[in-house]
Image (cartoon, rainbow, N blue to C red; front, side):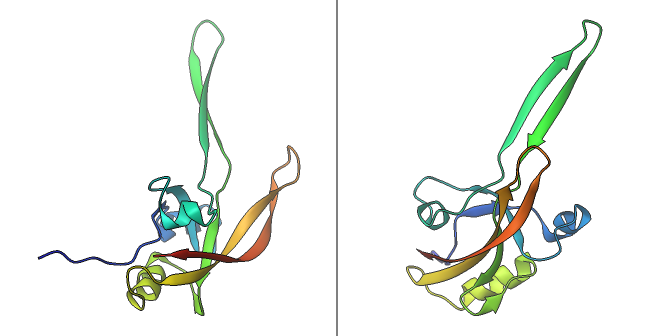
Length: 126
């Protein structure tokens, strides 16, 4: 038999790693799993990474530029602190249900980095 479970269609950074880089709540979205995933359709943003190589003629160094993606902090009325909370929130739903996803999104403030901004109302089928 086949078991279908609701999913947002995201890959994420494990919460223990996220905590080590200063993300204290929620799930950092690394990417959406496909262009037709519920997360992509709802406008949830992943974490883009661009690698450039610089060289001085003797050696080269890869530099990775990372812009934080959305951080999922809630699904409907469930606060999300870790992936376990995400799984519990989705287990309460059926495939095809519509959920409201609360996110934190970095706001671009120039070359010095970004500030966190709250956003809610992202809805999509799971």
